[in-house]
Length: 447
Image 1: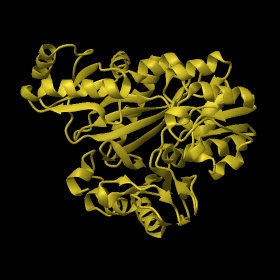
Image 2: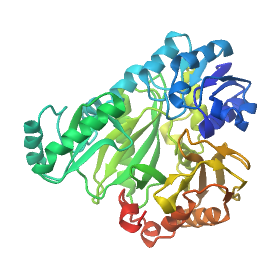
Image 3: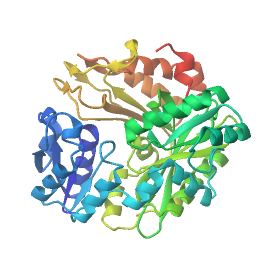
Image 4: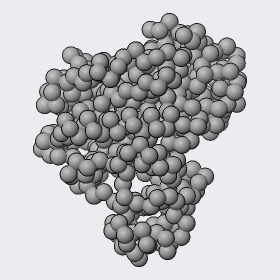
């Protein structure tokens, strides 16, 4: 097992990793920007190093400074968390070439699955259903028109290296297709430095269901069941839950087994998430894989009783998975609400500033993962998520009631949050019945 780990991240996930390491008897090195120097979780780390100014590109995205901190901190491994450099294959390579184990997949697997076009090819080899569309990249409007006519409109133009909804455009007909291609390619080039695009049939009113997997270096791969992440606004998740509502046991099992096949086909190791869209007839299609720990991982931890961060560390240290697929039992229902510093009454604009009062809820089956506290100053330099509220109860009805109670009990003053709209969602009749899809918010609320 590792003696000391550097955490190449900040905020909630940095604190989460510190706590897991302390329980494993592992020392931690935390890095921070000048904007984060007062963050309380830094006191829990064994050593800390400032790696630059507030802007992420001058601190948390500076590979050379992180490696320098690793050298000064005399660490064995580096955990990237999520976001920032977590899915940067070059960073993974640099870590390992400098003698530090990267707590994540190999750079080769990351590159294969990080490119949506090659990921689709791997999925097809593994017999995993993919959305009808182009077999590879699109290089001309003529080729796109031919494929669109074959699979039928509407179609979705997607960037091969895209993510977070960027590099995606919908075309309802042939007239819109050329413009959609140009816009998607341009946006992808600006955002990811790669303008490659491909074409998919647009699955209307889809649900977003993802399977959590873990894989060791001995060929053992397990799924930890699925999460439904359909409650989104502009491709940004607000509420996640497990199990996915209104999904038959047969489809759940089939989808999760498909995720395992994909992982085995790619040679992937460590924790990851295989994402699918599910149509109204419960047909599911692979869309992409996230080669890192997910924000919503506590939902899975609650319903399986498995600590995913500790599992990541153990796998990276060369250990075998401590459980088999048959031993992973799904119990109850867990729901997570992302507590974002955003003003939901004004188009979710960021709401940085000083938290004058914070009293999180508690009770049976309640967990609040956060690094903030009363008098904490939320920086405008980073993502607006300041915490995650998770509940787990015997069934979905009780979980919804628990989350509603917790959100109403939650006291946070000085900044705005997404709690008001999350309460409206949880109390909406269609949500209660499980009648949800990725367009739920747009169809039911004017935000």
